Length: 153
Image 1 (cartoon, rainbow, N blue to C red):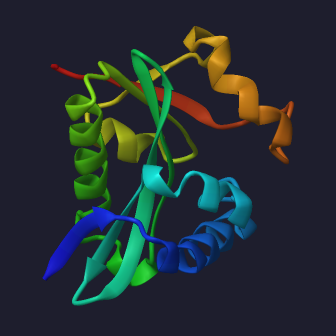
Image 2: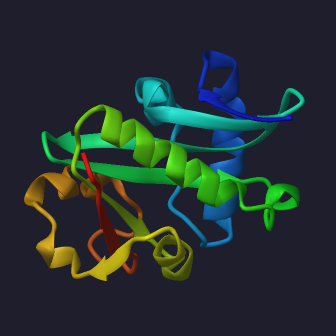
């Protein structure tokens, strides 16, 4: 049975390995263990029969905006719509917090569009979004695309 649950300390190493494996392939940005420990409460894990399948985070930017970040599934879990279910779970969390807009910076625009997001210019995002960019290996030449979804709250 597939379960979506909040991340716990034992999940950090698996999230770290998964995200950084994709980052090494140029498919997403790397995340440090430090970042994962500091932001652990933001993460939701997907597991099946106790086996880790993936994770994603909902990072609050401001009273009206949150970001989906570090969304990844193990390769054998792909194609089962678990990524979309994970995004929907994170969007429901945003709704429960009364956050009306959720964005993502992504290399996989089509996936997020299939989840109801629309492409926007990164310039349309508030400056608060960029506070962590200075630590990114892609800074200042970010080639991710911005997508956003308005929620009914």
